[in-house]
Length: 278
Image 1 (cartoon, rainbow, N blue to C red):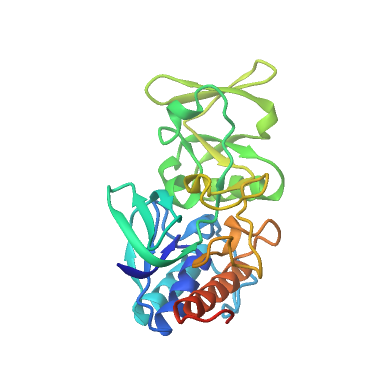
Image 2 (cartoon, rainbow, N blue to C red):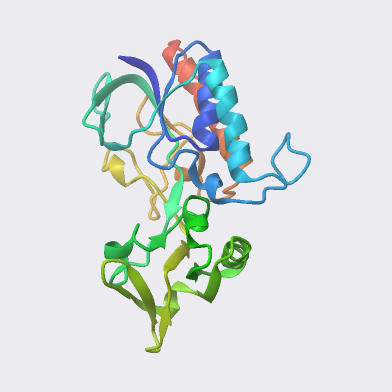
């Protein structure tokens, strides 16, 4: 039996862990498969408190995680696939086959890349198609890549990959694509006008979708999948809270997510202490 399980290890989940640990709750953080969340894909952060110079997202996450570990937060690399919040305790079924029981839960799963849904994407995801620059960018030094996305984020990704020594063949908006092609690995991108762009790799830098599908009907969500909350972090289920991009439709900033995480932990502590409010 856990007092508090925090699902997610980005700024919201890590900060929730720090506050919960300092409140004596001995929280368990389920990291997911991409520890650190979306900030791990950001190379230049100039507005996070405590970092006078521009810092990388991974450096910021490492600093917050070190603080969380020092506070006593426990971590487990696992993914929640199903939940049951209908009774007490709350139940979480994980990818590793465990069923965890918790008196309180904070959902801080963030928002993940929006896939294109085009032919070949499912086949080549992880075999040439990636959504994580920092995870996979270095593998494409000396190779040819295509960046899929719009605006400044896509241009920034192209510049980052070029600095790693990749040749960026094209930066294409999702609407310009028709399919991903190859054999056992990705070999090319076919565009909507019928052209073929040879590529060893494709990086998706698209809009983010709240990672809430695993919840099913356990919590109310809006049309885009964000968890519906009251008082910023309270879901419709007592003892279940939501923090960060999975619940916040606007102002998707790391510092805002961290603030949500702190508030969620304070509310969880208050709930577990048998009183309402922080």
